[in-house]
Length: 96
Image 1 (tube, one colour):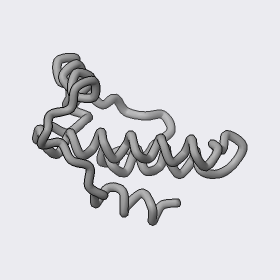
Image 2 (cartoon, rainbow, N blue to C red):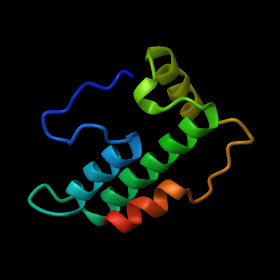
Image 3 (spheres, rainbow, N blue to C red):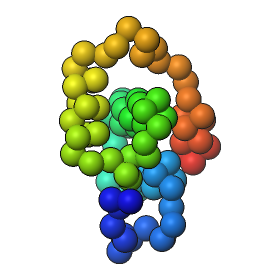
């Protein structure tokens, strides 16, 4: 695992739970994002987790090579890379 212990988040959170908490924090309170900005953050999180599932490598285990491959994918997605509403998206919706 590449993830370091967080001084803020509880230990043992999955990648999805950590991102969901971050998005929930950005949806409310003093640092609240505009609705359109929040929607874009959520869309990008969905895309990131979808890609991680497709490659079979959890984000917290990514190295620079996996990250570089993801960025290349974003710049020129493969034809098979369709967008479907994911389980992660439904999880984040419940956190909001």
